Length: 462
Image (cartoon, rainbow, N blue to C red):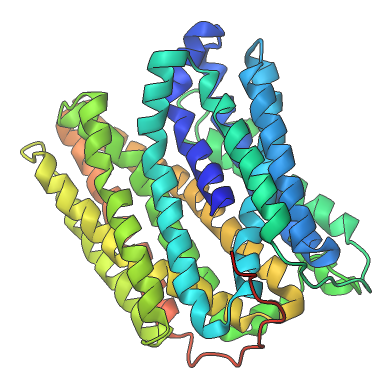
C-alpha cells in the first residue's frame, strides 16, 4: 500500500508543479521531460523488473525499489537545473518501476486465490487516493515550501515504508535454475522506449505524425519489439514466456485492461482542456471537478474486490466495462452549455464501471498465471496500464487535432473555434467508448476461471 500510494502520488503531484519549475529553473518547453522521462523509465522497465523479481525474490527487489525511489526523490529535491532534475527523475522512475511491478505479485503470494480480489480492490482504492491526493497535496506544498518539497515529502514516508517492508514482508519463492535473458531485456527496453517517445512526440505541434523523427522512432520501436518476440520464441530461457498468453483467462484480462486504460489515458488528456478552455473554469475549480472520478473509484474498487469472490469475473468485469462504455458515450455529447454537474456525473459513471472491472480483472489474471511466472504476470498488468495511458493520450490527441483541423479548413474557421474543438472531442470520446466496448467483449470471452495454485506463503500478522 505504501509503495503503490507513493508511486501514484508522485505521478500526479509533479504535474501541478511544472509551471513553477519551468519558471524557477528557466526550463522553457523542455519542462515536459520531467514527466516524460519518468513515464518512459517506468513503462520500459516494468517487465524487466517483474522477471527479476521471479529470479532474485520479490521481497529483495521490492525493498531495493523503495531505496532507489527514496534516493531519487532526495536528489530531485536537490536538483540545480532542468537536466539534473530529469536525470534524477529517471532514477526515481527505476525505483517506482520495481515497486509498482511487484506489488500485485506480493499480494498474489500472500493471499489465497479467493481473497486476492478483495486485496487488489483495496489496492485500487490506494491508486485512486494517490492520483486524487497528488494535486491537492502538491498545491499545498508548493504554496508553503516551494517545488522541491514535493520530492522531499517522499523521503520520510519512504524510510517508514522500507522499515515496514523489511519487518513485514515474507520471503518469496525464487526461480534459481534460470539465466537472465539480457538480449531480450535489451531489445524490449530500447524498443519500448523508442516507440513511446515516438507516441509522445507525434501529437506535439512542433513535430506531428508525418515528421521524419517521429516516423523513424515509431518504425524503429516496432522493429525492435518484433525482434524481441522472435528472440523470445527461440531462446531457451526467455524473459517473457509467450506460453503465458496461451492461457485464455490471462490473455483476455490483459487485453481488456489495455482497452480500458487506453480510454482512460485519452479522457485524462481531453477533459482538462474541455473544462478550462471551453467551459471557462479556472484551474482550481477544474481540479475539484476532476476529483469526482478518483473519489468514486476509491469507493467502488473495494466493492469490486469484495464482489469478485462472489460473482464470476467474466460477468462482473464485463458489466463494469459496459457501464464505463455508457459513461464515455455520454461524454461524447459534450457541449459548452454544460455546467460542472454534467461532467461530475459522467466521470462518476466511468469510474463506477472501472472500479467494478479493475480489481476482479487483475485477480483473474494473477490466478490464471503459474506461480513461477507470477512476477512477470504482475508486471504485465502494470505495463499495460502505463502503455495504455501513453497510447490513449496519443490516440485522443490525433483524433481531436485531425478532426478539428479538417473542420476548420472545410468551413473557413480557425482550429481554435469552439465548434471545431467540440467536434474533435466528440469523435475522441466516441472512439474511447468503442474501445471500452471492445474490452467488454474481450473480457466476456475469458471463459471459466482457470485452476489456480495455492499460495506458498501467508502474510504475517501485524
